[in-house]
Image (cartoon, rainbow, N blue to C red; front, side, top):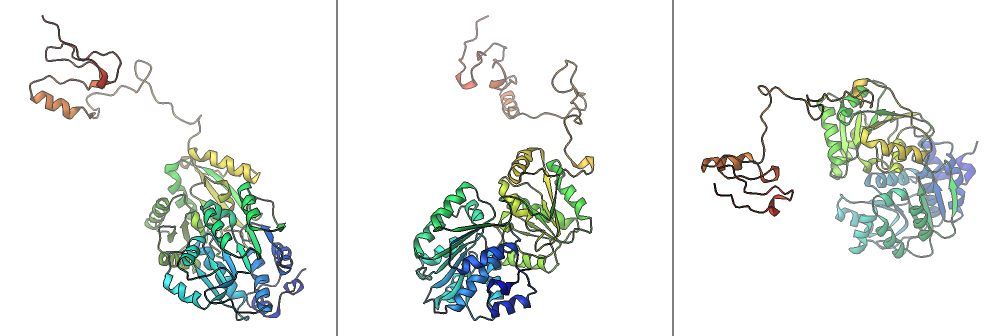
Length: 462
């Protein structure tokens, strides 16, 4: 079996890997590390949880260690771009862990944190800078960072950055960094838009792929439950009563939806925290720490957390809402079954989400098995729906007992009451029929035109 030392990784990095319990490289690391060590541009296609971070971090650390020099004031030698704060922080932690015996400096900048502290960290220059595109351009505009000394540019989760609308920021950064550089491009999917972006950044790259493009993790057991939208919360509570769900991420489509699910889980006695874009950086850090430490069994998240969470032993992923972008499904369920472990992904599919499910199955080229559950929790099929009883005339709504029928209120009631106080008989609204005077003569001709176009007709003399 291939070992890290067989790939030419330097002794200080091997010592750090051994301290963290890593002894054998993953397939993407076996393929990527030699290419990066040669200085070649690279496109790496791999899902989350396959060891992509180490695939570029280890050879980059080796290169910077063997060719030591000062980056320069407010500069960096290696620049890593990530789509989310959580992923940027995770990558920064990985660089520090793998390079703990090298003496190289690492800084991480992203939105929601103090600009002043970030400027202080960047002032003397750093070897490795990990950043989100928006905050990096903020520092560039304020002249607190320079990119003219970048030797290696790394784009991690490039497809997610495209989904989040960072394409214009990425093009600006590409025009600022030196033209002669090494570029590493990592993505879980490769649609035509990503191919076009890669062509703009890379020069004659080598391409590696450890899994079929847009496929789901092999060790993830997938299932879908067809359930009515109103019954999703009840189904979630029923599933979480299973003690085998030890650590779970629940994905919601919207921020308000995530908060609503979290509140209902807490009121039902489940330990849950939420993380999404409306949370402050402090709230996101505290929620993620509680989830990592086991203080919260459930993390409710929007797509912002789909790529940036690397927590061990996540047993289940539950898609409370199916994503409307099928590629996001691949990234969501990649939060479980990491580092060779098994995991389970369960998706809730409401009737109006069946088109999303078809798109997911078309992308992954496999059908998601249907999970049977209590009949009361899922939406009734066409054959199971009870036909609405018809009225005596054979159509329309059933007749109600007038004595017990609820009183119907119309927008024209107030007008009718005011009209009656002035001595006039109540009349129907103009769009419901002819308007008549107190003697019952027609005032408005009911010729089918909208009310404001109806013509006034003089009443005939008796």
